[in-house]
Amino acid sequence: MKVLITGATGFLGSHICRRMVAEGHEVRILSRETSNLQILEGLPIERITGDITDPRHVELAVKDQEWVIHAAANLSYWKRDQAWQTRVNVEGTRYIAQACRKEGVKRLIHVSSVAAIGIPTDPRYPANEDFSFNLEGSGLIYHLSKRRAEEEVMAEVTRGLDAVIVNPASIFGPYGFRYRGAEMMRKVRLTRLVPYFTGGICVVHVQDVIEGIFAALERGVPGCRYILGGENLTYQALVKRTARAMNLRRRFIPIPPLITGLAAMILEPWGRLRNRRPRITYIIHYLASRYHFYDSSKARRTLGYTPRDFGAILDECLRLGMC
Image (cartoon, rainbow, N blue to C red):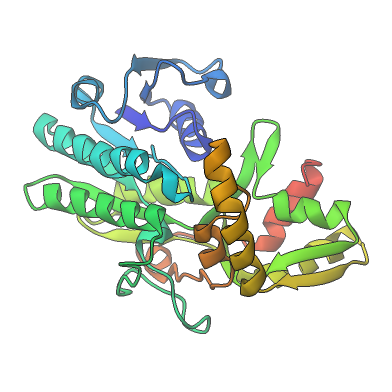
């Protein structure tokens, strides 16, 4: 198939490119002139130089393609980036969806996020695809932008576009010479006193997300969304399991919301003055104590999705010497 991939120089997008090439598909990417293509070096891909926020560039990239996988996104967790994040995540998705419908693309896979689902209020009940979005007015600009982006896709579905939405959770896995998600695990190795946030996340391996995307290309129902998650675990469980796997004795120190809130109050103004995002922002504070737990039962049932658990992710990271 002829397939266009946006966000191809990013973490997930680069893995998708390699898988598509390995399976014999003709891959085209849309990337900015300033994008670093080193992660794609050696791959036989066609490059369209342009910006996702320019409809002319998007139309040129989509032309003559059979599949489109839209993985481009701005991931900032800082309110200062709201205008640009809206342009990339919402307007860029609108241009992609409109161009796909006009060009008669056979299937668009919109890579959204569990952020667009909402955040469950009770860790005993992970959110599924039918969860009522509960973040309006929260100030979580990334979550809101991904929700609006899904709405743009669904608007084109009502006009005849064949599109499927996938919602990956927190993705871990190799990325060049690094291992995305290993920051928390690395702290366990480097310090005897290990701080951790009081909430939790849903951890998934990048290759499992790719399997879910390919299954959605083949078997996904147009207009449906599928959560691609893995194991739900607290940050405390994550660092303690890491310490056991490394055979290390550590002390674990919870960072309560009061501390993250004070840090955000102090660091955000300083970050604005320096024009650099601080380590703790209001958004990070908001997320740190909440349980981002999600239920992938729908994808398991209808797509044959079978993600690995955190233990397998940790084993790989240790084996590769990246955490």
